[in-house]
Length: 113
Image (cartoon, rainbow, N blue to C red):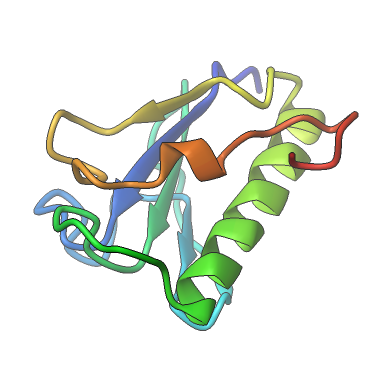
């Protein structure tokens, strides 16, 4: 199956409601796959948390979550044959105005940063 990239959500998105994603990354860094495919064109990943509020720094758990997200994106891009920077927000409000997009500097050659 050919995917065009990845759509990122945060868990407070009203469309999620326990579904609407292909992979869920919990606060403890666990990756939970969905039982059914969400979208035939994009892979949807939901990161547990609320990124709609500003913060000065991220917790250790949040940094680990973002590291796991980076690794998952690279693995999916390699497996499904799309570019690892084909990453898109779900909507204007999801994954939140303060989602750390700059932490998703993904390059398989440079090993993340």
